[in-house]
Image 1 (cartoon, rainbow, N blue to C red):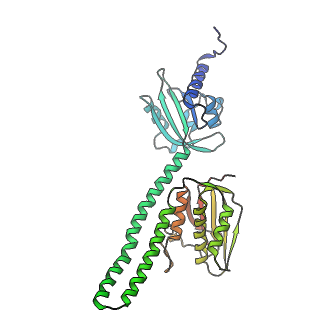
Image 2 (tube, rainbow, N blue to C red):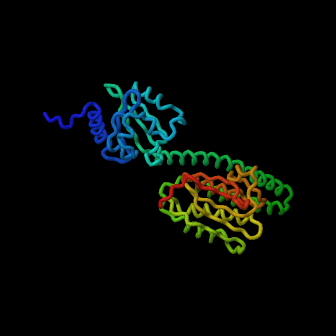
Image 3 (cartoon, helix red, strand yellow):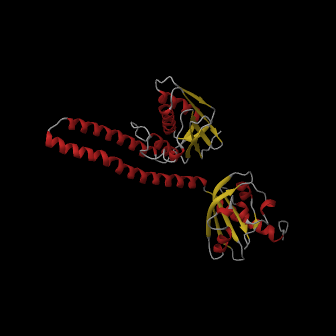
Length: 345
């Protein structure tokens, strides 16, 4: 009998894990199969696990499985609780995991008990699905908000129309007809704005590689119009995965907001962040007490404004899975930061 591959229980566990890994995973780089003992200590760490996490066997075997989690202390259900549950049958947990290079990914970790104690662990990179689920959650929140705003914002003009119709019938005065025409036009503009919000809130499912600088230049042409008092300074940002048309509208609305609220000459700057980009101006800025409100549908400090420009900006960002916040620029103007963006170069 050839015992050349015999190396004790540890090597046997490694061989078992390798075979399980090949059978269950089929070489997929987004999966890893490894072994744990009853206390959650890693006992076998096959090559697919090393490829997924970047850790070699020496760094994992003999260590507790919680080393794979980015922040185990922040989990709603502790790792030990999952291990305890898995002792009675298959158990699963989802959380951020950290690779050897410091990067993180959203992982689904499934544990199945073995007859001779311990567990088979299957880890799968489910970051893409997690981000998509988050986008759907945001879209559902926006949809509810949209229907609430629709009912609220249309109620007032419909009330005006109803009363004016009644007065026109009673008096025959044509000024009531003029008021009806004006109100109906306002309703039409409102419906267009609301439809734009609804369309832009659809989750981006077919993003394309998009150069942000090209999008900024196109948006500036459309937003600055014939004004000669606005100037744009844009740094190199790189390429992102996005819906270019919607991204253009995002920048257009931010540029229009800066120009509309700026006094005299306005300088708008666009630049990169570690995980996104910013748009800022040197205008009067946004008072701190309303910075949390400016993205709400219908919120405006301009008597002639619709209050949907920044709402659309937030909606477009959310459809891409990004976050947006407003703060102060170094010059005291408004600064919008879009984060959660993955750059492609």
